Length: 378
Image (tube, rainbow, N blue to C red; front, side, top):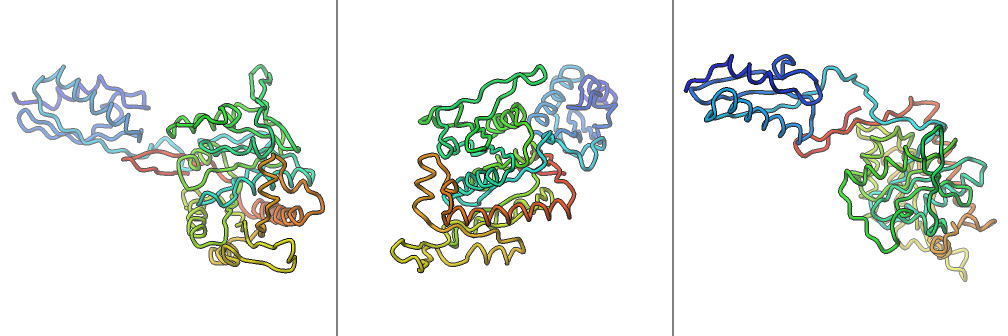
């Protein structure tokens, strides 16, 4: 049987383009059609980049042609994804958080460098300075903030805000805190795929009553993966802080962390780098410094990448002990650790003020998936 173009086009009028509301012919999605006897090759363009939308479009075309035109037709479909002409160039998919002007992401390329410990102590130091502070534990697969803030047995309460039920963050040491650790048992592993983790994060961000904050710190998981993109998709992050140890293995991953935020398509200002476990000073030799993991590696990396060096944290047993018992080390008044974190925190605030004075607000990014790869758009 010889197929006719007008018969195929009439059949395609029964198919609605994903996300468009028009049929395939009206929308101009059918770009080209070649017919050779009982064989037909069709070029289709759609705006929805998801693999599910592409597959659904292909299946619907096959079904409708076989049903309405010729059951034994041999059909080849080429689906191409194009940017929607209806979408503004700077579409912001994420929502700003009312009452929270500054959102700081704390990241590290490598695990085990003390990122969560640094985040907890930064948050408490900001609170001691008189700021209103929130902390979102975004490390879905390894939440540690409930332990570090001694609130492992606490649960966020429900509060009614303007007729809507919201989560009230748990609060300790002047810091409002939400973590997936509040909703799981301590021995329970979180085995979720990316979309489930992203949904949980969005609930902790948008279904929570954070109130008015000066700063919201986000403790990101190690690496440069799905959670990081989900956070930057959900809300406009003001700036990022990278934590690293001085050793080469950690610095290589910290470099990737900086590169992720500096990508043109993401464009989150990097406020600077903090060097953790910078040196060790034994009590019996208070004037000696032993550079166990290398000397000034993060400082040199900051200079190399032309970002600010925010300060160094020594390798001190009391920091680990304080975190384990749920009392951040900066609560030890008049201690070297308190002094160190006060300097680092002042540098972070200074860089943030400079960033806000000199740069426009950060846009939340729009993330899509095309051909199995992540594409990030402003």
